[in-house]
Length: 482
Image 1 (cartoon, rainbow, N blue to C red):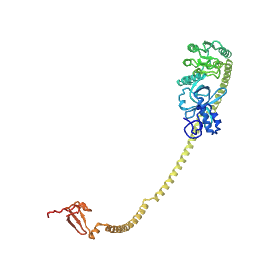
Image 2 (cartoon, rainbow, N blue to C red):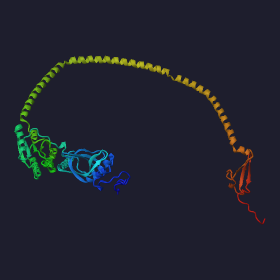
Image 3 (tube, rainbow, N blue to C red):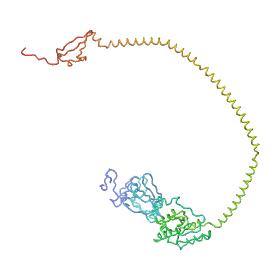
Image 4 (cartoon, one colour):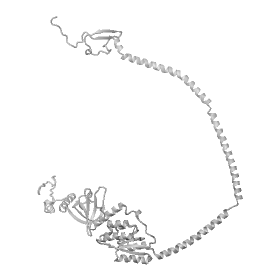
C-alpha cells in the first residue's frame, strides 16, 4: 500500500515523488495545490488518465460512427459523435474480434468502456470493450446482413435479370390503392401510352399484414400473364419501408417469372427488393416511364425510320448502278485477254532464260574458287610438312634420352649416398649388432626377452645365434645349502 502524505515512495512501490491514487483521496488536485508540486507533462497526463479511468469506468455511450479506421494491427478506431460533440474511440483487437456486426460510418451504436487519456499525445478517448446497435442501426445491420446473404446466394446476379418488354400491352401494379403513388403511375401512362392496359393488385405496404399481402399479390400477379409488374410504394423512414426489406418478400420477388420494376420510396431510398427485382426505378413515376413508351416519340421514330429506309434504298440502288457500270467497263473480249496472257508468257520465258544464265555463271565462278582452294590445300604439301617435323623430332629424341638418363644417374647416386648415411648397415659396420627374435623383430628392451630364449645377432658381416642366460629383470635366488 502507498504511504501517507510526506512519504517519498510512489503508489507503485518505487522511490520518487509522492503520488496517491485518485480513489484514495477526495480531491487529487487539492493536494497538488497544497504541495505546490511541479509536474512534468508525462506525470500530468498519467494522473489525468488514472483519474478519468477511475471516475468513468464501465459507462455506456450512444452516438454515430464516423472516421472508421481498421489498420492491419486488428484494432479499430473511430469517432463517436452526436449533433453537438464527438469523442475518439479505440476498440483493441481482442475485443474487436467479439463484434459480429459490420461497422461502418453513419451507424448508430451503443458502446461500453472507460474514459481514458492517450498519454503520448494527451488525447481524450474511450477505450471500448463492447459495441451494440442502437435504434435505426439495428435495422441497418439487419438490412446489410440480409443483403450479404441474398447476394451470396446469387439473387442479385445480373444473369437472373429479365429485360423489360419494349412495347408492353398489359402491366400489373402492386401497390396501395390509396395515396399519390397509384395516381402518379396512372397519370404517366395516360400521358405517354394510353393504349396500355393497367391492372391494380391492391396490397398493404406498411404494417404487420403488409408482408403476407405483398407476397400474395406477387404470386397472384405472376399468374395473370402480365407483360411486366410494378412494385411501388411512396417514401418514408427505414421502419416504414421495412416490409420491402423482409427476406420472404425478397424471395417472392425473385420467384416471379414476370419482369418486375421495383419503385420503393424516394430516389435516395434503397430496399432489398430493389436488388432482387429485374430493374430498379428511383420513383414510381420513373417506373411508369420505363414501361410506358411515349406515343409521340414512337410516331416520330417511325417517320425517321421511314425516311432513313428510303434514303438507304436510294443509296443502295445508286451504288449497285455504279457497280454495274464499272463491271461493264472492265468486261473485255476473250481474245484480248488471251493476247495479254501470251505476252506475259513471253516475258516470263525471257526472264527465266536470263535467270538461268545468271545462275549458271554464278555456279561456274564458285566452282573455280573451290578448285583454287583445293589446289592450295593438296595433301602432298601437308605430308611434306609432317615429314620435316618427323625428321626434326627423330633428331631431338636420342639427345633428349641421353640427357634424361644422365640426369637420372646423378639423382640415383645422390639418393644412394643419402641412403648409405642413414642405413643401419653402416651402423653395423662400426661394430654394432642387431638382436632379432624368432619372428625377425628387433629386440629393443631386456623386458622383451626371457632366460633361455634363442636370438639371432646380425653383425656388420654375418650373423650369430645366441641364447639369453639372464635378462637381469628378476632377482637371483641362491640356495643356502650350496
